Amino acid sequence: MTAIISAAVIFVVFAVGDMISAKTKAIVSMLLVASVVFLAGFWTGVFPTTLFADSTLLSMAGLLVTMLLVHLGTTIRLRDFGAQWRTVIISAVACIAISAAVFFIGQLIIDRGFALVGAPILSGGVVATLTMQDMANKANLPDLAVFATLVMCAQGFVGYPVASLCLKSEAKRIKAQIDAGTLQVDAGAAAAQNAAAARKKLIPALPDKYNTPNAIIAKVILVALLSVWVSSLFHDAVNKLVWCLIFGVLCKELGFLDEDALGKAHATGIVMPIITLSIFTNLASATPEMVGGMVKPLLVCVVIGTAAFSVVSILVGKIFGYSWQMSMAIGSSCLFGFPGTVIISNEVSESTGTTAEEKAAINAQIMPKMLVAGMVTVSITSVLVAGVMSSWL
Image 1 (cartoon, rainbow, N blue to C red):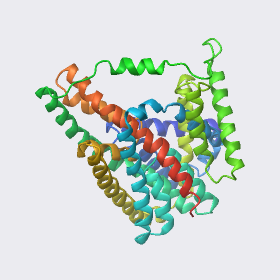
Image 2: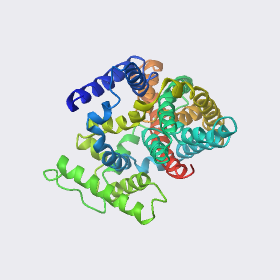
Image 3: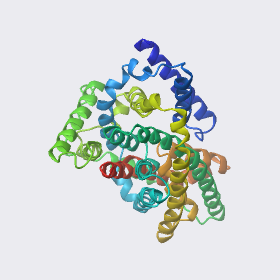
Image 4: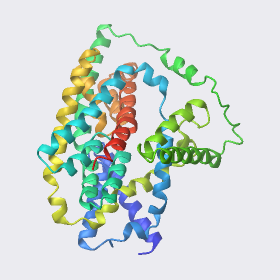
């Protein structure tokens, strides 16, 4: 199959997945739809098993994933973490609890390899999946690499409904407080945050006429290069992607990198699909028997992980005075992250508030918590956990 035909097939599958995800309000994820379509295509012979290689897109994935992690670092606002420190603790502890429970309890029921691979992925996202797949491929264990994809696809089936139900209950509780006049909304909070964002940085920003998309991308690649070099100095004891995330945050705070760097360079639209494609590469070698044998390990990981984040989130949230609904919603962000945290918060606010003011007030209470929670779990904690656990096989 030629490169252009292969690429067209892949992006059409992704587009259909996006449409179904939007129609089901993200309960059925694009990743799940794409996995089913690709598997069906490979098993029936409609797609050649060389589909991904033929597209030539994978040759860029290794570079782009380092750039993506640097970019994610530029989306993290440390000042937001300071304002939402309780949320940071709840979400981080929930993420660690999922990984620990799935690994230590899961291996008592299923094969240790499945528990190890599923642990950081269930509490993370694309980067955690790629990290564990890389570990499995280096160990020549293709079944574990396929299992990583299945875990990634199963997350949303639990995460989105739990978050939606919990936030709906929390929104009703907030609305009752607004109606009773016991909740005061700080109208100046956004202005104060914008003022903080405009503070001077150690490294002055490039003038707009020089800060072109090429310049922004060049800076991102330079930071990725620095991260890979530092990782090699420590003999990859800490995964290079973890260093990319750390240096992305630091360089953005110093002023070298722009906030939301790849977004500002209008590059995320092509970067994300190519990186996402890497998740599906092992499906070409998966057989129906192999996938069928993974149903039990998958269910075990999901059940243990769900129980772990639910209990831990509620207990830690109680210490900080959060309602059990808000705490559980924060913990569930491990299973989907951004942009799901924003989508669900907006949907709940719109459906619960009766006036524009009520909707804005409800959103102001839940959106910052969910946004920070998604960053802490998927973009930070799960990456760190995957970086550590990838050496445990």
